Amino acid sequence: AQSVTQLDSQVPVFEEAPVELRCNYSSSVSVYLFWYVQYPNQGLQLLLKYLSGSTLVKGINGFEAEFNKSQTSFHLRKPSVHISDTAEYFCAVSPTGGGNKLTFGTGTQLKVEL
Amino acid sequence: DTEVTQTPKHLVMGMTNKKSLKCEQHMGHRAMYWYKQKAKKPPELMFVYSYEKLSINESVPSRFSPECPNSSLLNLHLHALQPEDSALYLCASSQAATLADTDTQYFGPGTRLTVL
Image 1 (cartoon, rainbow over the protein chains, first blue to last red):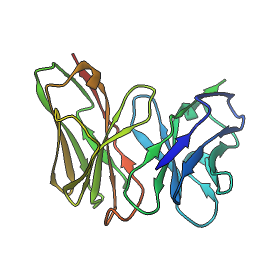
Image 2: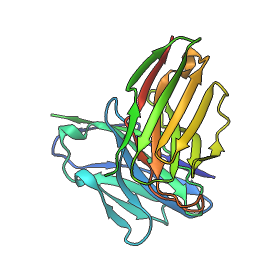
Image 3: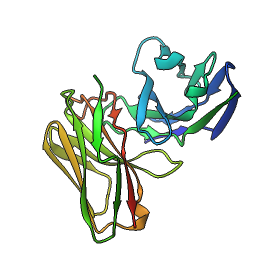
Image 4: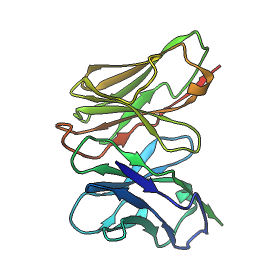
């Protein structure tokens, strides 16, 4: 079984400041890792994913994440946020052995202020 | 194109009503999913269809009845729902040649359901 921990339920940040959203996971098997964003009253949009290869993954809207196997982390970063980045961010994992079952973290609300 | 569409966007129904949610994708994906999302919570998996066959049912009450008429369409039939079933219902799809593969799920915008 897998579990995902997003320790920060809310992250306030000023516009143009950098931000890091933390994600740690626990799994007895290898996993694929994902970050999804959910804007108010909308569905989930894939930001980026790590399947294999380079541990630094670049996604849409200027976001990137780094997979750290030893620390079982997949933190999301952006060097300079914009008001439009205000949203809920979910980290998720699924086992590489298949099954297509995503396990989500509880989400982090990013609030960008002027 | 990674679009999954869902209709209706909003639905209000009484506890004795019968209604259906619809999901459609034209990406050639062979796996489709229903999720339920309560406010301020992550999505919870309800059902998975692979090659139009139900492969996962996460112990969902029988008042929710999924249907996959073809590889592009996924329905969720609702009957005798309870107020606590009010939530955002999300559909997703992925390529998934077999359940042994794991690949990216693409989500629709969801249907906001209110049960009175």
